[in-house]
Image (cartoon, rainbow, N blue to C red; front, top):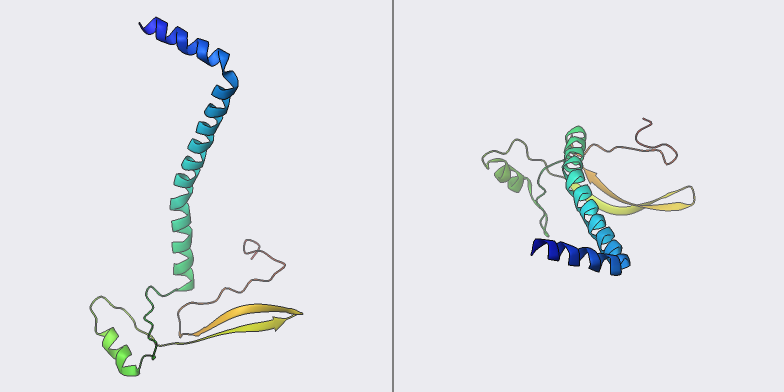
Length: 127
């Protein structure tokens, strides 16, 4: 029984080898993409975690449509496991620089979200 099945399978592959090769290539391509995504995901998480630690990015942002008062900030700081609470102001805008416009978001914070300024001509690795 097994010999007949193997013999029939080999005969089918020989008769339709182009279809077999294309299906095998699609399977290998799918496995390759899946393996690549699975391998890079932890590295991406580690990279963003390291960047957030270096730039001291805040963990949670509380937003109110009417704004928050100093009393609201004091009440938020009373929550357990909260290390620090800071109030901030935000402004969306654009900067005109060398005949080009750069869309920006300006956030005023004390020692959080330290900006990383990059020159257009140099990459981050060169610094």
